[in-house]
Length: 435
Image (cartoon, rainbow, N blue to C red):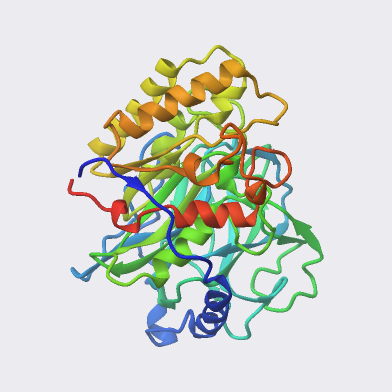
């Protein structure tokens, strides 16, 4: 597909979508099979695991139905976190994108130095806070067993959970961890309140024992569902802007969330899933806040089933770090992302680097690199399509700076309105190409 530059689209429809989402939540996780059929035989094959650096090509078992396949409905990029105490439960709240059946979760110990044991795992729907919708909490199994131990550096998928999960649902995954030592794997800046509790409370639907509020997701890094085979997902590779910093917490106002709502409301399109692969402070070329985008591309993006398109919005942290990164350096990095994603059969959409004048690290040299990089993104022809978020978010009176209406106040991160404008700038038809 020839390179194209996307333009802004219609104004907010978020209020109506919030009402629709509330209706959908009540219908989610309806069992498709009787309870007796949901258990797997004791002789089931143990879940497969794989090293953290190896691409995860999809759930353990292929769909028995030829007209359906697995697609990621949620994901968060893994990173090294602090020590995780044993004998503790975690109630993790996530927002689905595409709806489907046969939910699976993926648990990651990619950055752990010791095995971690999940004695039980449950999933339900959020009613409010740590309280679940009555009757929605259901046990997950791993190779037919209620517990699983994940070796250091590996991941594991749950068995499929019969039933239907609606799009735009507040899904809650509750884990009881009895074996955890040393550093954990998780996503530090969730912009979403989750909960923790001492002891085993994973099966409970009430909020009574979930007294500790946490702002990170631990171990859980993906949720997938089965969808028709023509439905796919887009994974957004990015930094704190994609991770949602400065958006309103607990309201799902990161720009990939707004994109998800647009995709669900759109008719005719088949890209419906959205994976947020942003890490605050992340760079394309160098490790720091998370592994460099080039190092984590396989695990955080290409491993997710059903991903058809990679949308890349990274580079400002490389530029403003004053490490001597040049236009050519970043172009080389972008080309590697494109080549590897193309080799995996994915479309790749490039987003221009947004303005940051007024941020403490801004200077003329960095601005020159940003302008050169953006010129290449727009006209270099490497990407299958381009989203010009620089043009959408910059001030017409000071093009090196964010438009004040979109500025959260730190001159780097957009506010909720800026996040929505970024999502509205995406030409939804550009998320598919012929590969």
